[in-house]
Image 1 (cartoon, helix red, strand yellow):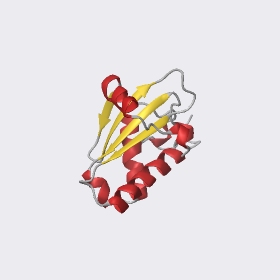
Image 2 (cartoon, rainbow, N blue to C red):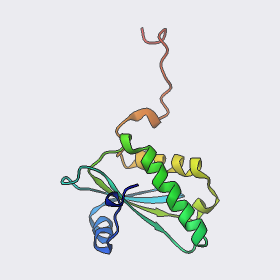
Image 3 (cartoon, helix red, strand yellow):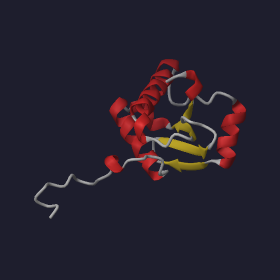
Image 4 (cartoon, rainbow, N blue to C red):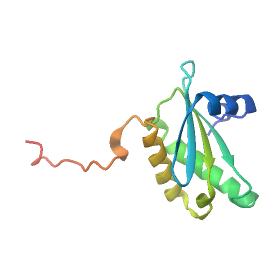
Length: 128
């Protein structure tokens, strides 16, 4: 993830906390703030020391960045996202983290495509 696509400044975090909308599940809290002047989404990460040592925290942050990189085409672009990892993320692998992030992002309605839903593909015989 390029540096210009990250939220780094405390002022930007605080703005997202105050003006953004929050959505959560057991593993993550996501604050989303629409920014019309942006052409690409940005993410800010917060992983507490309660989750684990520096190695564990950095691994979780890498997993989250990679999940957002893979979801890039499916996300609405003019948003700032602040992701706060909760304690259960310490026991999760990449695929579980990505699945949990997709769940929270679906709740916040920032995914463009419904391909992550429970919709099963229709067969040609069912479409008529």
